[in-house]
Length: 55
Image 1 (cartoon, rainbow, N blue to C red):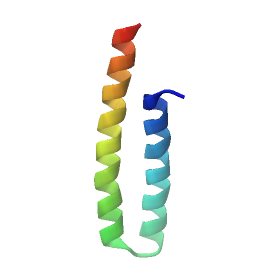
Image 2 (cartoon, rainbow, N blue to C red):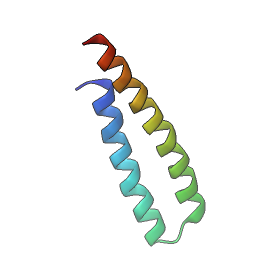
Image 3 (spheres, helix red, strand yellow):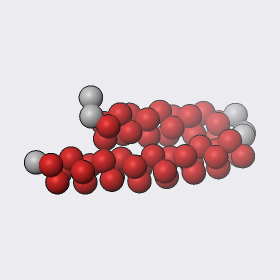
């Protein structure tokens, strides 16, 4: 599994965690997970760019 694929899987896990935190009413947790999701998506995009450049 490539780094980009691992990061996309992590992003999906974060999305699920955000939804669970929303359901149980943890707004600070939702915010922190959302910030982590932004960083993971940026890293995934960068990894995809590196993969495209290598081809």
